[in-house]
Image (cartoon, rainbow, N blue to C red):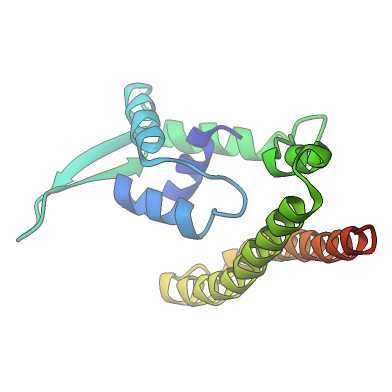
Length: 183
């Protein structure tokens, strides 16, 4: 996926400002794609230049004016073409700096490695708790926004993230025990 497809997909639900899109990436899509605000605004500019989105400035009282983006028919076509055409390989690209450091863990010392794996486990447990909140928020958003028909698909992605995180926690627990035995 490129960021532009995620932006177009979100805009199929409703018109949004760059801030709204960033917020959606930080909540709804946080466990599948991360994006910085600068990347979002850069890609929105490109999407607008290419005719995939339009924007309008919405004045607000006591706040800065908002630039709100809408997907165009051309943008919808591009999004649907992308979403319907899966690549031949569904292999997930891996770039896991943490696990590369574990691979070279003999250079850290056992206690330092144990500390980092415990920290990893704690962060993954927090992420799992956060996913529960995301799941409930998604359910509420689906009902309030009239997207009940979309919730099942949102839930499938949440469930995948939960299972991946649970597996990471189990790995961390097993690795901690193995390292303790070898001390």
